[in-house]
Length: 156
Image 1 (cartoon, rainbow, N blue to C red):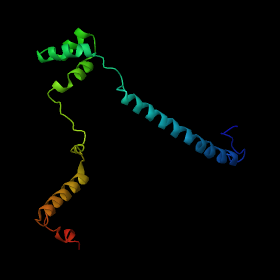
Image 2 (cartoon, rainbow, N blue to C red):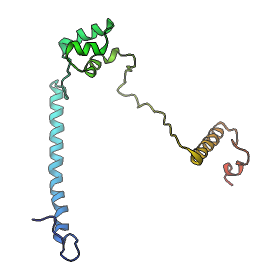
Image 3 (cartoon, rainbow, N blue to C red):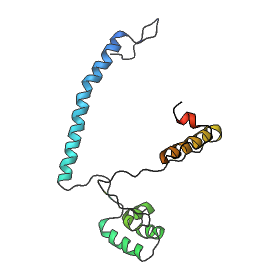
Image 4 (cartoon, helix red, strand yellow):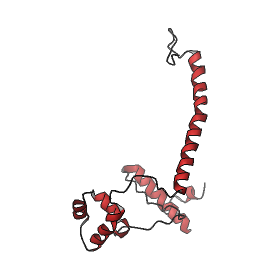
């Protein structure tokens, strides 16, 4: 069946195509859901057996202890990568918890809020700066931040 068939004069899709395509999509949805369920079941079974998903580390378990010891002795990541024949990112992965910017992530801890900085020129930036000052002033109970804006803040 041609699912691209169009009416010769109007160029619209034929009504049989408009009818058939949603039916085919609806028939394929349970198959996709079943495939997803089976994939998750397989992943859970592998995890229960102790298998860990993902790519194997480039620095094997036997080399990891050596790499970590050499890093603690002061060897650079680039030198370790050259000596062991792996990339620098593989070395960083092997010594990740030893790096200065490493932070331990707790499983149940909420995600940290990151500050957002917008760089806006002109009147828009001025407006946001003034409304931010007003918001801070209102939060602190100090009234208005700008003279003459009291009627706007009071809800008049």
